[in-house]
Length: 454
Image (cartoon, rainbow, N blue to C red; front, side):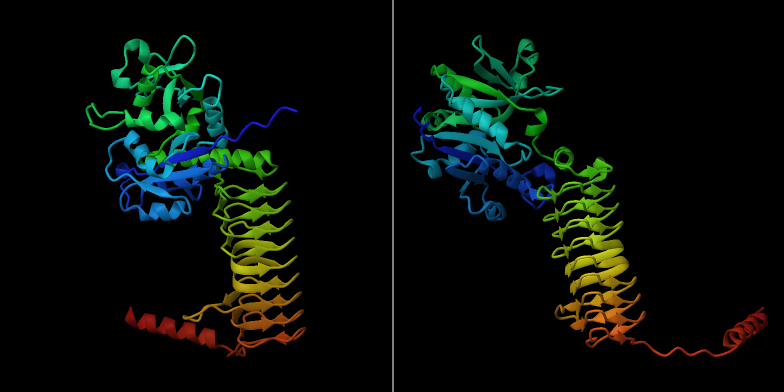
């Protein structure tokens, strides 16, 4: 049996110090959300899939919110914005003595995948032993991207910025995507050698390729799909990344057995989980923390967040399920029904125009139109408990804390303030009174008053 390949340590450095001036936001750029998760969170998810030995996030001064968002991973502070190589240098203190492989990536490129990062690491570990591996792409319009110039052996010879490129070099379609993988044993010296003799007096990470080649070190390229390495510098670019992420999530949902009637109008969070044979109608929006069991139908224009829906349930149209909602098997939640922090047990129905909050609805209970659980008294939230098989008539107000027993019936239009026993009928409304001829007399009086004014 061949000996096991020795473990080679891996570190990842995520650059997240950019101010994002073009975002025109008080929120640090990397904390803007894509599919419900901060951009830097997507990058961290891709990185952690590689099980690295070290992860360092480089932030700017005062970016405590970014540090909190990436915890428990440590942060290094780039005290001045002096370029990408300087940003990586800021992480050196947390990587002192590290000699494994180091992947450098950006907190504003949330679409990068673990597979691409693995390919970069594998390329770094090839027999050619490249000091630097650069991620490349071939966009439809290379535009002003830096070009990756290969040598006769197929290795990376240099990175040429567009403004500095010759006409021949500008014709090259292989472009720099920005991410790099380094041999940690050589990275510190390479980046330490980067100067700032340029128009902006900044230290550019791309210079390491030329420095490495002058020293006789090999460099190489791994290619990725252009859509994977789209960065975000503006709100318009954020919306484009959201579009690309949603396309990815929709495809994954359908590949896993869900039917999306109109995929382009369905919006997922990155953690949305749909079972087999789920059907989602047009216009549905899934916030964070939604899990949907097999065979569920979600009709058009529903909003769901922080909920669990069990098999066979039917939701909507126009339903709103808020955090803490637990929808049991074969439950029906109909149009304009809102459920929050409530358990709706197997086979129960609330088919229209209802608010159920801080409650339990027992199995096979029926909640009539216009029912409200009055859960808030201005100071605290209180629970309503509705038993199995109970029937709540239309336009009922259940003033919590209150219990309705198994099999009980509450008459339509009731305001229930005390417990209803099992199998009892509760009616809590004023007595109806009728005054014969009153409506006719009222109309005649009004007509006479109108005639006098004429």
